[in-house]
Length: 353
Image 1 (tube, rainbow, N blue to C red):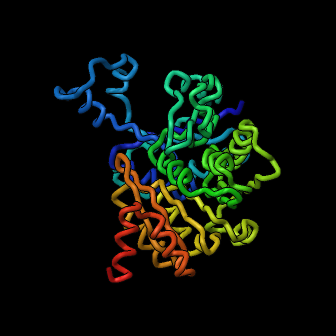
Image 2 (image 1 turned 30 degrees about the vertical axis):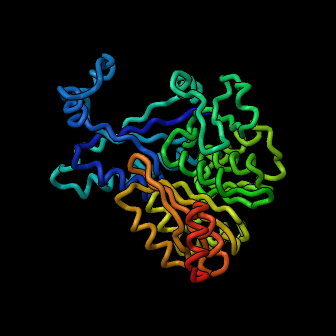
Image 3 (image 1 turned 135 degrees about the vertical axis):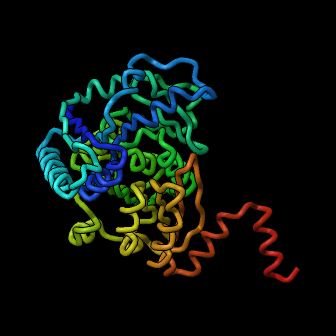
């Protein structure tokens, strides 16, 4: 099991945007915001539907506002931690009026074993799409799942147990779109859950890429724990936005490309992501908050992609797009999105009936 640095940055509410902006620039996309004012309002809400609040949560009522992130206790993580220290020092020097608060950094260690064990009481098997079941290793398989595709994945440090809205929507899209023999590319693979799903649904090969070395290692471990062919998996560590050589290694011709990341990273990828796709390929994107979906869509469309469909779930958005380079393929994709009744109606209109 790995160890992790829990990095807590003490700041005022006015400093949330500045601090998280610094973390995003360092490619740290996952963080937790502790807002004491919001929590106080929650505990005092007389119309709330909760009946009981744990004493440990009540202790947070008077806690310091902060932004928290987790970094792996390895060479890469220690390098990121040093960059966080430098960023906060620089931000403090620019904050002459102390608007953002102390920006003090508190670092503690978390064992992944403890992290994973704390999840066991919450993570139960669940179904996604028409044919997928996601379950942790400690839960027994149900005989009723004999005709389902079972993905076994344990909660840990990497994002992607399938419970988040964005992952659920991506899994649902994969369930609809993957065909036997497809090449699949998973950009920002996290835990590898989308790669595992694609391979189990029939993809011939998957390529998993993440900027975080630990995520790639976990993705490979999860892939192998699902009994999948190691020779069909290729992994890369790096930043595809800045590294042209990495993009060349990844190559082209992927019929399924998934990028479940965040809006800013998707926008950064928009100028080249279409080049990874085959002529009849699908691009699945998610990790987008509803308020920013058109900003992302506009960038994708401006770079040779056509939006076919998008779904929303609890304020999160996922979308399916195709390349503009093959008009016939676009038509086939558009027809595939129609119901049987809509298809008959379209054919009737085109034939003049």
